[in-house]
Image (cartoon, rainbow, N blue to C red; front, side, top):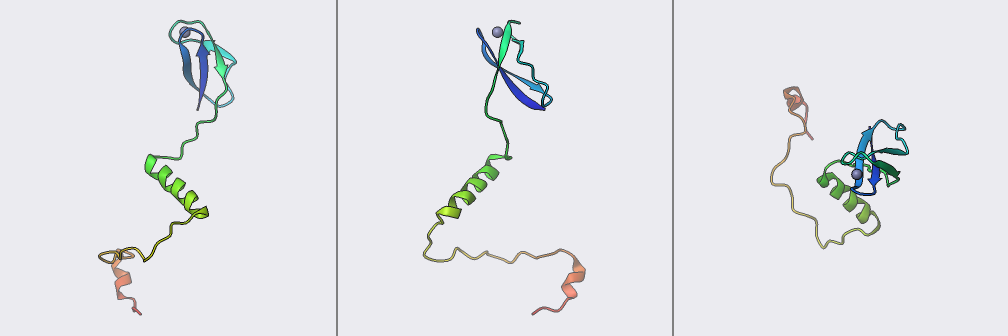
Length: 94
Ligand SMILES: [Zn+2]
């Protein structure tokens, strides 16, 4: 499904969710039933939630202009086990 935007002269923009490639050049306005003309807009691509988008934006920004730090960041307070499988606990450790 894709969201297509149509514009009614009286009520402004209205959206329709239709299968890709099935949008007609005109449709009826949902408010008044008049002819609404299709408006071509930029595709609305979603990259997930806001946290994920912020991470992607920060990663792209730091690729060209990395943050300058004077020391390494704080160490984690405790070690996180790699696996919860009890059979792996018997393996030799370095
Ligand atoms: Zn209308």
